[in-house]
Every structure is written in C-alpha cells, then in structure tokens.
Amino acid sequence: MSVFHRYALLLPVLTLGAAPAAWAQASSGYFMPPSAQVPAKPAHVTQPSPVQAAVPVKPPQAEIPNLPPLPPENAPPTAIIGVLSVPEVMQQSTAAQAVQAEIQKRQAVLKKEEDTAQAGLQAQQQQILAERGKMPQAEFEKKVQDWQNQVAAAQTKFQEENQSIQNAGQAALSKIEAELIGIIRQEAQAHGMNLILHREQVVLNVAAFDLTDETVKELNKLLPHVTVPPDFNTPDDTSQPEQGVGQ
Image 1 (cartoon, rainbow, N blue to C red):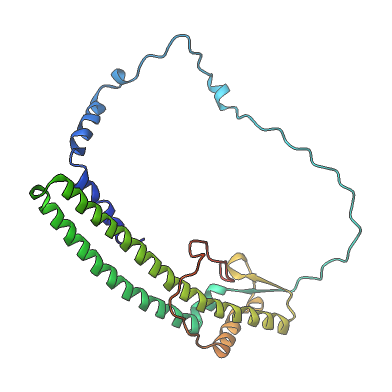
Image 2: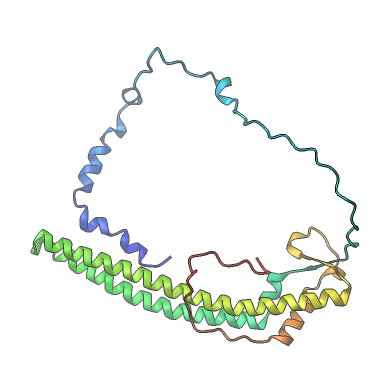
C-alpha cells in the first residue's frame, strides 16, 4: 500500500468543517434508555418460533446418474515417491538470494523517493490550511482539489513503479524455477521416482525419499546467478501472478 493513502484520510480536515457538529447531533441518542429507542412490536405481526427459524431450507438434490462402465484400461504404475521442499531450495539458492537482495535495493530507493514526495505534500497541505481564512472559499476549494489531484497522481506513480520492480523480480525468479523443474526431473529419473510431492504436504517420510539437499547443490552448480532485468510494466499488471513451483 502506498504511503500516500494516509493523506487521503486528512482530506476531511480540509473540506468537512461542519462534520463535528453533525456527528454530535447524530450521536445524541446514544445514551437514551433502550426502552425509549425500541418501538413496541405490532400485535398483528406473527413472529416465527425458534424451531421454525432454526430449520434451514435445503434445495432439492440432483439425482446422480447411473452411467455404464467404461472399457477397462491399464492400471497406473506402482508409485515410487520422492519429496522435496521447494521453499527450502529457494532459500538456499544463491541465485534466488541475489534476486531478493536486488529487489530490496530497488525498493529502498523507491521508498526514499516516496518519503520525499510525502514530505512535500504534507508541507503543502499545512500551507493550504494556514491560508484558509485569507482567501475566498472558491479559491481555497480550488487549492484543495489541486492538492488532492497531486496525491492521486503520486499514488498511481509509486504503485506503478513498485509493480514494475515486482515484475522484474518475478521474471528473474521464473528463470530459477524453470531450471529447478529441469533438475527435479533429472533427480527423479536418476532415483527411478515417478511421483514427487511437496515435503510440506507429507506428514511422515524417511530421509531416503528427500531430494532437497541434492537439488540445492545441483541448482547452485548449474545456475549460481541470474540477472534481474530492468523494471518494466506489462498490460496485465493488475492480474494475479501465475503460480510457480513453490506456491
């Protein structure tokens, strides 16, 4: 969330000067006795009994069709299982560590730019408040509107720049994930495994099933580093990112 969201919360100070009085009037009934606030129920209204209110109305169930059997097919092979912790592999990947460090560096630069812009907008807001009684109301409202437009533009700018940084990081990570998938296939073939499960989804396994350590070693040997591309925006930035092997 952009830091400029906090400025949007300050706008009522500039434009809603009569709000406290209205709030006090609307809140004056809060301390009235409950009996004075709850009107008597009309005698002709029939209230449902607790038993009736508690019984849910179930929709009719569709009938399950009785389908004919399919022709027999070959049974799948016997499962030879391996397990792998993708989060642990990515944490120990030198390439992934470098990508994370680069993204954090770019975000720190962006944060400084946000802080500078935020300070400028805050100073401008204080100046508008100080000049409120020294100018016509129309001129004051025009300055408020101009300030609001600047806040909105700053929000959009920094949201887009942050998204472009995320895009660059995701592009670099996708190269690591592609290499990782190839290594997993290699490891599975070498061990004669035909089913690889996420270790986090397995309640119990023995060490002989686990491919994590050797996968980390192979990944760091084949792909010790990837280059993070320049920040960029794509037409589908508002869409959800694709799910990778570690998600």
